[in-house]
Length: 325
Image (tube, rainbow, N blue to C red; front, side, top):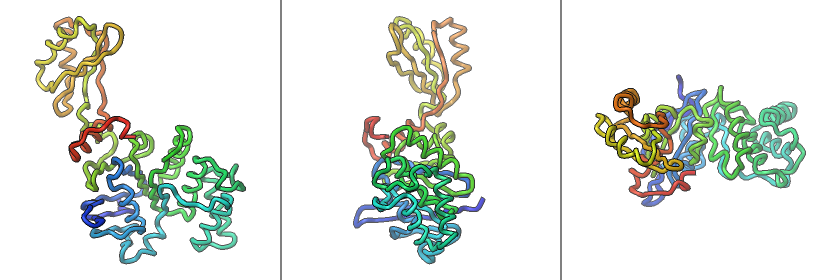
């Protein structure tokens, strides 16, 4: 499948600081790529280079075959961009603002009106069409930003933190809108919110300190997490040592973690080496030794766990859960 966006060995330095470090990836039509990383990972800097707002120190970017350095006008015509905190004229109505953007895009007369009507209809802005932007909710302002990005029906969309600052209902609405328009476009979404990847992305890139650490579908990346195929069991507190001693010798068991579960019970999490599937073997041992296990289930790998593994290994730091969302 032909790449709509091609990024090759992209690097951006600010003095002695390297914000983006030899980054390469491609995005074909029909794919929604989540650009995932902690704050300061280089996501927004990469977005600004792809859209031509920032010049790379080195490397190459092509949008629909046009080199953004050699032919910036041709490449930018193929792009729709929603920057983080997209600036708008607050005293304009939704319709007037979109008309203003359409004029900048070169549309006039009936074609201008058609483009504005199309964007308002597609992004469901009819109820605030004649309302000034200053009076809109954050959710509707983000919708207006998305509407201006698709006004010229570009084949490539670059959306920087598209749900930033929105409440859960507003996030759900914006994610649905992105999914609705994704089938005929190549979309890049910059985010540090892990749930965003599960909600809308067909593929995820994890970066930190400007470097690409992982690239794959959300399901593929989950299989790389330390907790992939982990087995969780609920047992009575007084029986935990009996169960642990019976299961620890199984080949492929990395460790068994214990956490409180409910009154007089604990959860034992059996973590396998390299995500190996031990469920059948564990069930056999439980049956043969009549181990008093109350509940058992196998876990799917968690993207958050892989995120922590990769970004902490890259930085050597330890962070709290709140730093990931």
